[in-house]
Amino acid sequence: GGVPDFLAAPVLLARARRVEAAAATGTVLTETRATSVTASDFAAPTILGAGETRIEYAPEKLTYTLHAYVASFTREARSGGTSFVFIADGVSQLRVRGLSGTPPSARDAFTATLLPGMYARIPGSASFSLSDGEGIVIDVHNQDHGVFMLGGPVSSLGDFRYIDGCTDSLLLAPSRKGLSCLNHLHFPPHTTQTLHWHPSDRIGMVTQGVCECRKGPLLSRDPRTGLVVQCQETDTTRITLLPGDVFILPAHTWHAFETTTESLDVIAWHPDSDFGPSDEDHPMINRTLGATGAKMAPQL
Image 1 (tube, rainbow, N blue to C red):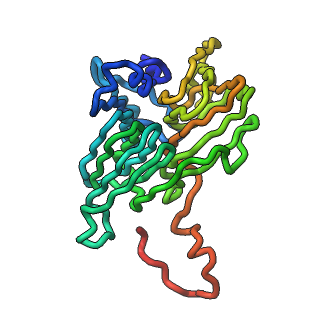
Image 2 (image 1 turned 90 degrees about the vertical axis):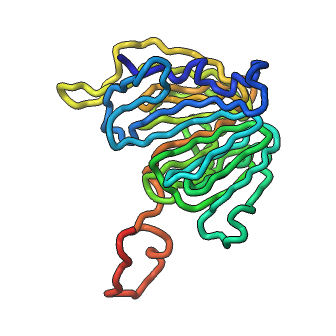
């Protein structure tokens, strides 16, 4: 029937780390989704089988897997895709093998110590492992960013204005317009966000503070007019989010965050963007003048 409620206890993956059984070395909790990345597609999902977490909306959609790990995580190299990593707690040792563009002698030698609040973007063609610490890994199976990047730790405030007094930082920008990105959201104390929605899924992780998330009904498309309409249900669900909690907000879901006496910080991954460079719009081409008649390189 309807869209599964991913903003619920089973998907607050990191909450399981407060359960003794999940604190053992090597615990990895996983959710997999195929998501629409366009606002125009409101196709109903189909659950593939009992207990399955993979949700198929329609062909030509982005498929990603969310992992919340404790103590260790390993991902083998594959033909494509990209992984986003965020370290939530403890100190993690990152080891990457097979990065393209590195000298042969260094291909198996790249290591880095990642502190809480640090993050990385790793091409699918490289294998990597994380030891110690806790965090999340988002494997994007059919989207290539290409370049390995490492950054952080996250600052306490955002760089850009956002709604209702909140601020936002773009941690890992899309390498090409339309691709996914990683963000940091900062909510001041006593914030009551306006209910709003996004045209694609959001993965979030609370890194600091406590909040209540109000989740309203899913949007739908009127089959007669093609217009986006709100479902008839008017009830909203309230869910308390704690530090370390990880959640998925399905596309087109009304939601808002509320804080009380302390601020809130959330790491948010977007599967798509309307921002970023393209063949026709990037700094090198924009600041190249006087090259009248020059031939452009073949389409990449």
